[in-house]
Amino acid sequence: MGPPASEGGKVSPYEFVRHRTARRYIIRVAENGRVRVTVPRWGSKREAEAFAERERAWIEKQQRRAEAERERGERERGTTNGEPAGRPQPADQHALRERAKKELPPRLLELAARHDLSVSRVSVRNQRWRWGSCNRNGHICLNWRLVTMPDWVRDYVMLHELMHLERMDHSPRFWKLVKEACPEYQDARRWLRQVSRA
Image 1 (cartoon, rainbow, N blue to C red):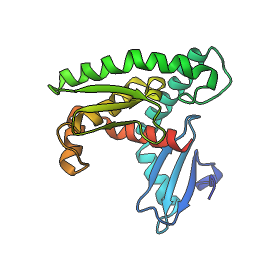
Image 2 (tube, rainbow, N blue to C red):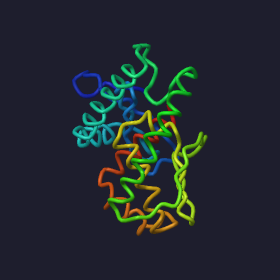
Image 3 (cartoon, helix red, strand yellow):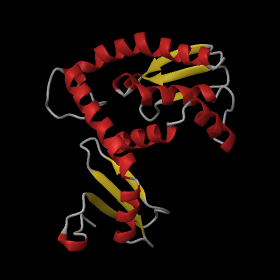
């Protein structure tokens, strides 16, 4: 299901993809600014496009952020090769890991103090499938790749793990704590899902 022509022969700015198991319409903004709308089996292109139009302000906000991150990534690498931000070349990884060890723990402890939480230990690791983790002893592990991400996404991951010091689950009460600490957490989660699929 590609970009359809809407009324009057005008080409839609969105790419529509039908998904059998999707339960609702879902919008994703890629790092190149392209907008993909997932259409559930029961949905229609017309309704999907109307949904996207209602979310235009959010979409434009994400596109601006994506553009800013591309520019930031290019500046940090000293190149304009078009590689996505957050996916550093192997030669850059050592320097980024060292930077992560210096920058991430102090920021985590700063956020912990702001929310009156106590962290027993902070580790920066090369986690393959997680952005962060927290155990019952108050030990928080962070993925070094967080240092390549926008500050607001990095802070969301840290706050997410810090809220596990209050609740070691993903219950509605836990997400309420996350929302109170990070009101834009849903935007950050969308950004992370987008990067994970890139």
